[in-house]
Image: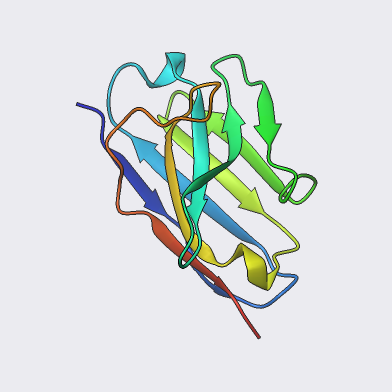
Length: 118
């Protein structure tokens, strides 16, 4: 069974940067399209960045130009580099598989909290 473990969140000032990591167990990682989702307080979880097995990336408009998703298949890890952070980026961030319709398909991990505040 696939397990997802997110890390790297924290408190950062507006304009700052963070790098999130997600370790993925399971031999199918290299063939999976992976994504980062965020869930802000009181809102539904949404997909903000995805990367295919062929390293094609897609981003939500809200993070385009500021966030970069990457993956290391040898380490079974997917990353999210977040720059120019804004208070509205405050959320719990999760990684998961990402279908082209935006649906996740593995059990959710615990997520990692990102708080952007001065």
